[in-house]
Structures are given as C-alpha cells and as structure tokens.
Image (cartoon, rainbow over all chains, first blue to last red; front, side, top):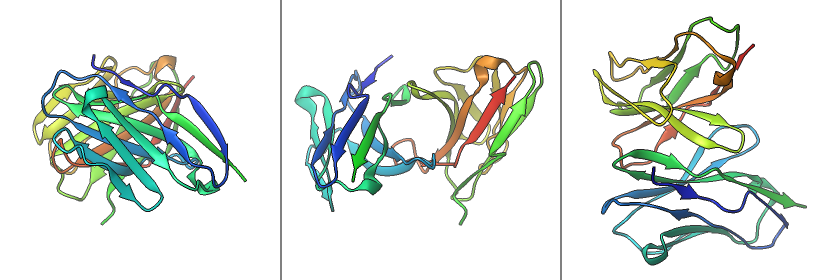
Length: 112
Length: 112
C-alpha cells in the first residue's frame, strides 16, 4: 500500500505561535490528489483543502497555508498565530488509483 | 441540504449479532465510501462505490457487506459482529473521486 506518513503524533504549542504539521506520501501514480482534514474534539471530519498533483502552488487561506513539494513528496500544513480553537487532530490524505489513504493524524494542542 | 447523514450515532452490539449502519446523502454524489477509525490508526477504507450498482473492497473489508441500490444510500452491514469491529465508522461522499469528500458525523459502535 502507498502510505501517508504524519510523523508528528502530537504537537503542543502556546497560543499565537506558528506551527507546521508534516505530511509525506508515497505514490506510484502520475495523477493524484492530496487532502487535509481537521477533526475537532466533537469528532466530525472537516475538509480543509484539496490539491492535485499538477498544481504545486502554495496556498494560503487566512491563517492556514499549505506547502506542496513533489520533489520531496511532502504536503505540509502551517497554522500562523495559532488559536485555542485550532486544537484538533489533523489528517493528511492521498487519493490515487488505490483509493483515499489517510495518515494516522497529528494531535495538535494549543495551550492558552 | 442535509449533506451526509449517518444513523445511528451510537450502537452497542453483542458478539454475533448483525446490524446495518445507514448512510444517506442528498448531494447527488456518485462516489460513496465507508471508513473505520481506530485510535492511532487514522481512517481505513472498508468499502466504496463509484455509482449505483457498483461496489468494491477497500483496505479492511472482512466482516462487512455493502450494496448501492440508489445514488443516495450506501448501507454498511455487519454480518456477525466481533469485538474487533468496535470502532467509529464514517461514511463519506464526493462528486467525483477527485473532489473533496464530505463526511458524515460518524457512528460509534461497541461490540461486547
């Protein structure tokens, strides 16, 4: 199976700090899609972003930004000026010919 | 527009019992899938469907059955519940396999 690796199991920072969540993926596909999802303590899964393999432009949405680098098979997620409401588990996922594969998630704790 | 609706939200089964987890979407999405989430494991694909009448196995299909008689509904059947099937189950749908996935709120299943 082509894996998605989120090496950081848990990250704890103080509010207003910047934090980057790492995601490294394996793929044999030429065309694939990458996703980030947020799972707050309430348990639902919230879609954050989708990126296709042909678009390496970085994306910024408010305090969130994503850095996609095909050369290193990475799709990292940065939260600027973190807030307590950002506390959640964040999942990176890859969609290829074999379906949607999730990483094991990074538990982000933002301390006030 | 209700999105993806999963029922029930909670269920306790005895070993050997069977039951069906319901999933319905009202977005006319062709692609639907079932995942299970276990602590430290991320989400793993059980079964998926690319349209009415078409289903296929994912990473962990054993002990589960699915059917897709309509575009809207994608029920997941546990044939003979086992304690190893204690998990949180999520249903997801998307317009195509490449677009963002919308997840239901999950079903927490306990098998005793």
